[in-house]
Image (cartoon, rainbow, N blue to C red; front, side, top):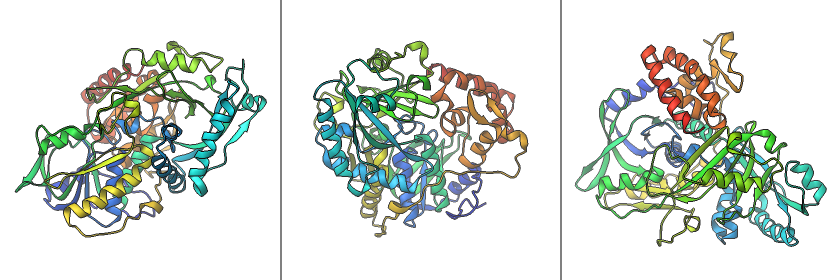
Length: 510
């Protein structure tokens, strides 16, 4: 069965077993990408659209790590502008405009308002945001505006009114990070590539000190596959140093990760369509309070971590810090009892000179070509994933000697459905849970078209239930498990194990 569909026309199902069969053919791939987050998916799509034979392998699920745990913003980074990193901001603003054009179903403009309470807040913030607009140039969304107190209250009716002198409104963009990951995965297949989840790398294949492929294990069958490649790309994010150590044990680390925590509360804490930006928190960051999918997302922190858990949890004081900081600006102060979900993600920060504060570490990306020819790309941020991929495949072409082919992704549409299946009956449109806009058809399509393999895949990434309302996600998990079992051919024992596993996972989001 061919998994290669053209970029136009009806969406085709994706069979994981058919994809695994490709590995048994023992073909040599031009490019093997390790890592199914934003960077890896971007690299695989870039290489596929250049006409290379591309395989992407992901140890867990697409976007399972950092790439589904972002602040949901496609932005230039006003904070990086305050740090004086003009090149990064300029690059990100260009990529923002490309994503708004190429993925309109996934990325949309969002207006932010910065409330001003001090005498000099409006001119100070206004000057910085005017520069932000100037750097965007013709790629800008709309010019920033100085607001008087009445306009600020209209935009942010829930903001603290005492001492309010007005505000500054400016534009950035918002997206659903996990859904963009899924859309990129489908685009890879549409352009002739292959991307497979639950296929961790257990070792590198080396030929005369050259990295010539990877050894992977299928978590569903326990089968081991040796995959040959002309070039291997390490796009594993915060775990990049682990794969580098497979080639050179004891290699000096590139990364010093930090953790960002977000909390989700009901929409009543910030009614309306505008987002709130707190320009400076006690730890020197900005804090975002953002309407998102019928809820309000508040974050984020910046805390150094020396460990690399797959499911990072908030550290002591992080939730309180977010709630307390947001409460200084909101008339209705959020408490722990108001939190619907809390999630954390790890940032792959480049540690170039050993500075102590993670907030000062670079958000730019870094590419390394090892002695054996393995290309590692890490650092960066969601907004610039496409540019990161372009730079990485350019480097891979040089490292592997596979010829020079131009990048075409700057104008490449990224589509997100709608997916329809003629086998679905009327019951497929019935809502499974009143608190969630999730139907049986959504679950079925997640399996057939989006390579969902577990309850977590559906409720965390194909649908955002776990991130929006962890308790409601727990409640609907048994129903989702039964639908998955029917689609995938599993029994009641599998359903029970899935429910236990997901319930334990969701408890960490409560």
